[in-house]
Length: 383
Image 1 (cartoon, one colour):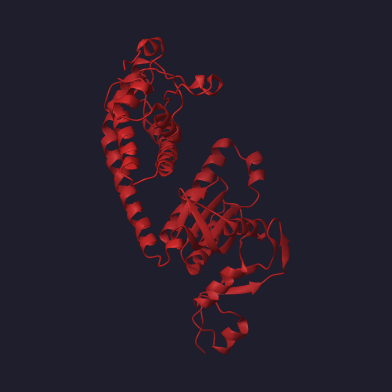
Image 2 (cartoon, rainbow, N blue to C red):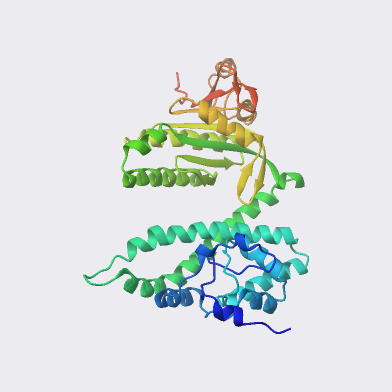
């Protein structure tokens, strides 16, 4: 079967790689094609593309799919999962695009991945790296490519800078990914029950800045951006340092989880204490729930997550609320007393946290819950 190149010669050339347009198959309705995402033919943009991808444009999407030995339909599914927009049949792809298709299809053919799982791999990788690439361009490279001399343009600085940074950033990305993969694998293999590898019992915490909507109206955009960046950075550092896992940040809100209740509780109180010490930061409130959580593509779902979010919304300023299961788990593991009477009977004990039951209240979508106030227990002083 011969390939009709007339389509590609009539189309505008375009880049390949993460976040760039890819062709559609013949079954895609015309109205679904993103015509606004047509790639540029700017000479400098093409030079930068070739530098980053390490190869020249060579294939149309149809030619790339055929060279990889996969159907156009499957190739389109992979490309869309990776976040590549449609470009018809422009000659925009490289050998690396063909190799990536061949590898994914090979994993399916070998039975190592099902086709839906391969699509999930493509989607999770595409979403994560797209966000990383956007951040690097918007923040990192933008700051570094300020023209050092009058009369120089940013584009004149960009090419040699990318040429120097690319191999270093690539190696660093692979290093961090391997470390994270090793840590995630270690957590999974320690789970005794196979079912818990997907549906696991975790402590899930939400931390939310109070009055953020009012701040958006009062602060300048740059000030607001700095505040959000400071909050996200501080939260991410505290979560990682104390053994939790940051799931995502949503501007004024952070979602994290931990394998044990005491770790999640310590992170929550550290967040409150750290934000209180910063006069520029608004008050913070935290909600934590403990229970079964479903994990998908690095995110967490389920009733436990929803309950943690609801607890956050009703928590007082600079306070932590936990659900009954979280309070019970802290008591079971000896991190907090089941009751203050028990603690007094033991002479105070070596408890790290204190729990105070609050009034029961209805929570939207979850019925009536009894939240507990979590605080740090003062150290025991000798008589």
